[in-house]
Image (cartoon, rainbow over all chains, first blue to last red; front, side, top):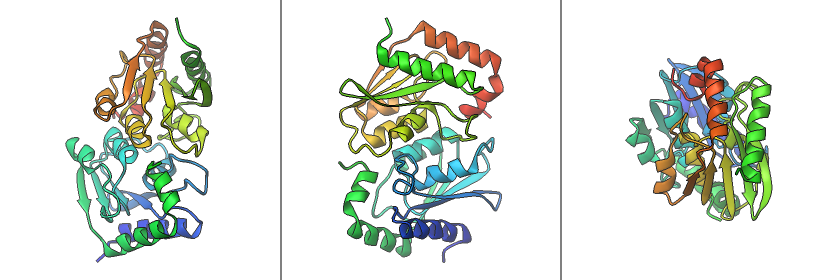
Amino acid sequence: MIDQFMRLAIEEARQGWQEGGIPIGSVLVREGKVVAKGRNKRVQENNPILHGEMDCLHNAGRVGSYRNTILYSTLMPCYMCAGTVVQFKIPMVVVGESRTFNGARQLMEAHGVNVIDLDLAECVAMMEAFIREKPELWNEDIMEL
Amino acid sequence: MIDQFMRLAIEEARQGWQEGGIPIGSVLVREGKVVAKGRNKRVQENNPILHGEMDCLHNAGRVGSYRNTILYSTLMPCYMCAGTVVQFKIPMVVVGESRTFNGARQLMEAHGVNVIDLDLAECVAMMEAFIREKPELWNEDIMEL
């Protein structure tokens, strides 16, 4: 079963895909309520720093402390996004999968972040289909250039 | 002596300060030419992810590989910006100082990034004056909340 917040993150990812972008979505939650949503906008905004998680934190704006927040992402965060989780002191990250991209789980865990990988078939299938469709775009996003 | 690129980064920082923002500036250089400049825009754009380095990489847009680039920053990068340097495979980072903020030098060096700290009195003085002026804003930016 996929909880309501991961469902929202997947919807963000699918919206990004429809826009011609990279299908990775993210949701920031505080005490059971959505603070902000976001999706990878490298293509849509010609912006390499707007991974799904970064767009979500951008959309949240200046919210003060992140101590009671949970960051959801359809994919394991990369070093940029993991470093941001550490810097922002976000205590918990829930991800859809890490099969198509290893990311930087260890960096987060080394700083006490609780990382939960739901290993969802739906998220894996979405990323696998996208990577088959646009391998060059995916390699650009993970800097395999 | 302060080289031309660090001079530009300091100018960006001072412009941000005049705007009521946090005085940290950054410049991305490739083969001796400026690719983009940026400055911390937390205040100006209500955006917690736009540290100086992130704004600079945002302004650069999709430039492909960063293999021949150098990132200048007036202050040692935090975990967000250091994680981004690692993810983007930027091989060299030149910083103005690290006395007022330790940052995440070790994360970058652990991934093979060449980090040079110029330890410039001008950069230290700028940050010390800003922190005295607006300690709450500085604590918000480094998430000491």
